[in-house]
Length: 65
Image (cartoon, rainbow, N blue to C red; front, side):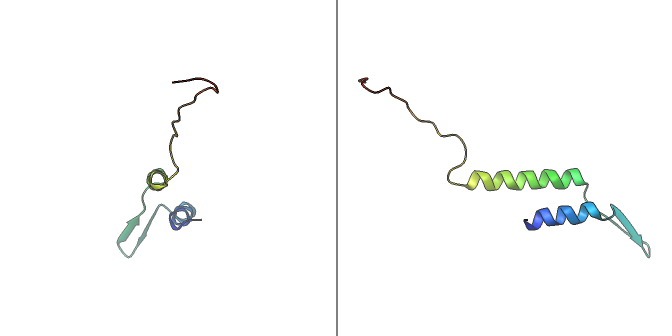
């Protein structure tokens, strides 16, 4: 599990906001965290050498160009 996935899991199990001694803390919404995870995963997928579509030219046997 990646560090970001662990943070999302921890944030989902905890409270959305907390207040103590006049200080208020609020986390990003879960949907924002999931979108950030998707964005980072898509960036990592693009950097892989064998990602995306592979376009090849098919030629039946015996044909001449």
